[in-house]
Amino acid sequence: TTRQQICQVGAGTGIRRRWFLFFISLTTVVCVIAWQSVFLGIFISNLAADKNTITPARESISFEVEVEDEEYFPDHYLTFSTSCSAFQNWQSFFLFYFAHEVNQPGQVIRIVSGCSAPQRKELEDFHETVIQKLSPNFHIHFTPDFSRIRDDSFKYYNKPFGVQHFMTHWLKYDESNEKSKNSIIIILDPDMILLRPLTYDFTSSN
Image 1 (cartoon, rainbow, N blue to C red):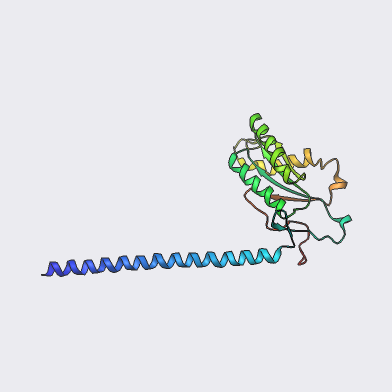
Image 2 (cartoon, helix red, strand yellow):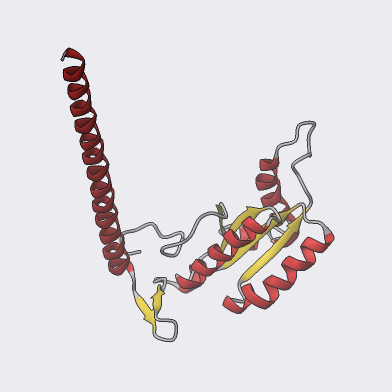
């Protein structure tokens, strides 16, 4: 009957639609896997091409910064601003770790804003027992909470005012202006990692 024919056509259309969706899903999965494979291959090959030395004890990638004249190599201060949250504690650990892995020159400073007394004590203990084991050039600098420095509450005020606080109280820039006039101050975010050292040298040799 006409009703049976309509049902058969509808059933056939439903089956074809399911097969079509299955084909699209499978194609998407294959494309994603292929893209990830290509990306991973390029990433690994570039990483292998960029490495200069390997530290056998750690069996990890290590870099040596080539300096033509060490006497004129400027001081480097790599800074990043964080809150006291556990989430940004883990981000900070990874940034410190990769700074260690690539032999980032100079000092690496975590600028922490708005900690309570217990949070500060916990971070100081963790930094002393874990982070500074990686390098004595890794530091932590505490600042007040600048998020309410004006009428509006804006947490991102902590970044510029935190860096200013670091330059004034840790680097003492005003007192040692002549000494620090050629210093390089690098400002990163805590969710970044280093794949090679960040220096003043942007030539192809580095």
